[in-house]
Length: 249
Image (cartoon, rainbow, N blue to C red; front, side, top):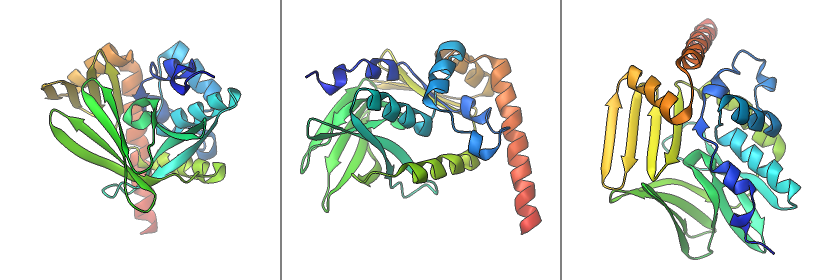
């Protein structure tokens, strides 16, 4: 039997970027129609160079591994500084559990070791999955000497209805264009007009919208017309949402 990481799907997943332009463009749809199924995501990736966010990528992972006869399911993480939880996937394979988290660009399986820890090196950022007490685990990142705890979790499957509920709700928490990926041992991160390019021993930072447009095109193959359309739609959506809050206050 092949190793889990040798399943061809993981080579595909590592090529798909994290970006929410594709998600923002679906704000014009009714809420229950906004989530993209796995076939649509793959089609958008091939034809439009879109990627996805944690929900659509975790869903793609689960559906793709189902075809291989492998069990995978969504799990909710505790991030204390955020009002909305984070979601990733647990894969069960040959009596072991593995973490895969496209939201943090962990697009290959990392074995979860009970009462131990496991390290994944990814160029500019290293990831550690560490066992805590009471059957809890923690994801940590380390970059240029800085260790950061990202979230805590238990290996508890989230059922499909709850996952879809959170997925639909997540559209209400978008407030800027966000994109990230690893390319040639570099970590590229864009949030609105903020750009960060991180490599071993070096960090470049920019706070410039034109630079964000340039890098969204250079590293994510997203053209400026599409980006501006997403920005206009998000601005309209946030304005309407603000008006609804004022109306009911």
